[in-house]
Length: 94
Image (cartoon, rainbow, N blue to C red; front, side, top):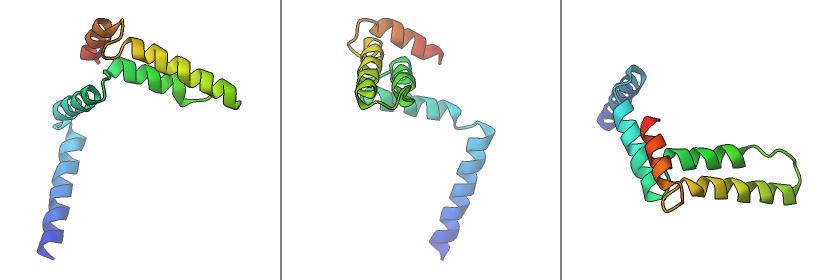
């Protein structure tokens, strides 16, 4: 019972810190670390998600083409891509 109360108190404190914005710098740093682990930056990941997220036409072949184009364009700004420096520079501002 004691651990449950301790857990709930910790959750309330963390929620309060999150709502007040105290955790924002840590959240951004954690996001950058995770994206770095998968070889992305904020620009490349955002491009991939926005270009492949919503399907324009419900055709299977067109969806594959849309996914491939979105991944290629996002990969240009990702780690090792032609626009890696530009993607990294723009990600610092986000």
